[in-house]
Image 1 (cartoon, one colour):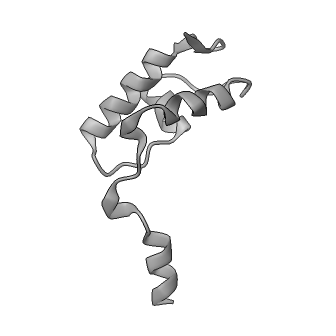
Image 2 (cartoon, helix red, strand yellow; image 1 turned 180 degrees about the vertical axis):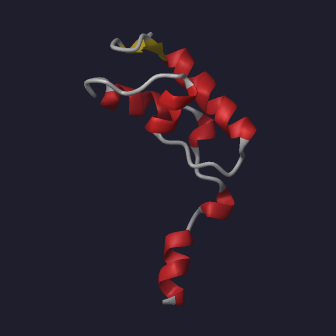
Length: 79
């Protein structure tokens, strides 16, 4: 399914980019911008962003790595 018509990005492209990024760096935080860059593209009109994000959220590899969860709370506690 085409998710971004400006760049002809499909749901398969998004999932492949996320899987590749997670395999390359298990600790990376994956963002839409990083997905676009991994695909050699750049966001254009932004009309696809809600569908783009929804597609990203369907990928199990999108999860924030366990060792990076709660860092903000930890930093706030240390003051």
